[in-house]
Image (tube, rainbow, N blue to C red; front, side, top):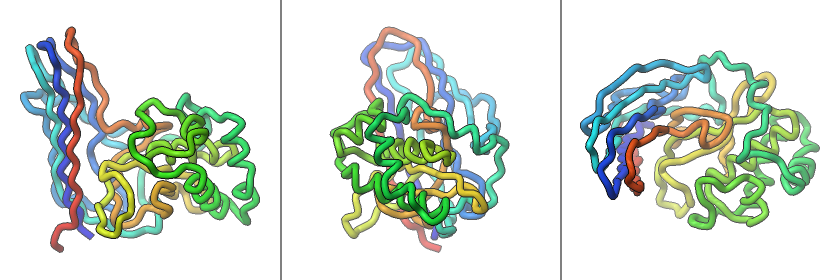
Length: 270
């Protein structure tokens, strides 16, 4: 499948800012399931800085914008050929050991509710892969998909107590539960092809990866009840949503910020 992506992120300020600096993780991951045909990342009136590949195998690029400025606009466009690998991240080169993803973070910090969820039926799986699937199913049943009820700083424990949330909440909850069972887990950011069957999801999407002995990293999208397939485009990973954020940065000045995001993911012609 060939996925066509257009992604625009616009930061607007109500007072002139002196400048902005950003770190972008907006480049498709290199692994057997993805082949970049064309891909362009740009920042309006920005100056491109250094580019490097971090220990997790993600490409990161720095940008700066000189002021005075009233907005910063980041644009992404391109086409990527994807293949269904049943969620297995095959052929991905990275240097960070899986054990590094066992440490809890603030959004994934376990509470009694998460411990009960992790130690329920999911803990009785026949093997590690079965336990991972059971965990994903348990999270999907415990947290209903409902946009607008949580926010960027909602923790896994809070989403579980609420019983509702979005893909970020499902991913954080699954990561927290997997780590409680000594299974390394991490947060993945990317895109998901829009469907016409009413399946709820955001085009700018997120899911979890759990490290399974013998297989390596395997993706689980509890929000949609499946493993990532050819409809998914992987960008990068981290210990949680903040760590894996596609855009991180700071603007210098007194203005308050407003964020507008437009994402379109379509299936292109072969």
